[in-house]
Image (cartoon, rainbow, N blue to C red):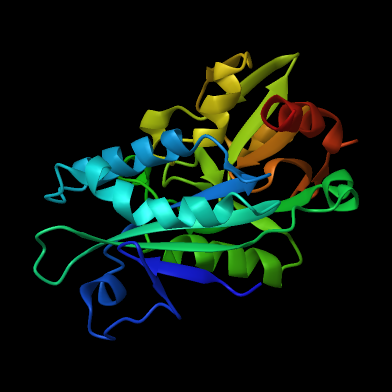
Length: 263
């Protein structure tokens, strides 16, 4: 299926932008990616709450953003009800007059990774690209740093990259939060370190997962018993290796974490 697109609740044949629009020139916009499973968007409210917080922290004058999303989401949510598996993305851009947001919603089929890919796990590379630590402002359309880190990692033969701040502390992976286990205890990076607030990780915690927040270096992750990437679409993907350090059976822990969300 091709991508279905709505602009402010109205169906569109495709996303059309003025090339000089500030959202393209400056990356001036926010977005959320939501996995749809059996017609249900997984923890949609948590995603929308993060979108509203991000807009407020970024200084956008949309005090009623939560109400402004109701109309634009109505038809996409109806369309999602008949889909077995899909990816829904909600984009919010400043309008030309800056009086309110432009809301674009896209919906497309999403095929989860096959079991063999989960079993193999991801191969990560510690990137030379520094993380800007702007996660509290939400998932922005200006992600050149993340895409650069991912491109360099794949050129070197890895799956994705681990991003650190200028002090060498691990912040997150290019498209996921990082969770690691040592001695039976799960750890993740503190929110105040500057990574994106993880909706999937928080949902897992609401369902009973005990996670401690701790700053860590890449060497700390390499010494861990297991490392897992947490994201909205893949849910939990085990890490097979970080640079030249290998982990055995990367999907053993990731499988149990996926079950917290999908069962």
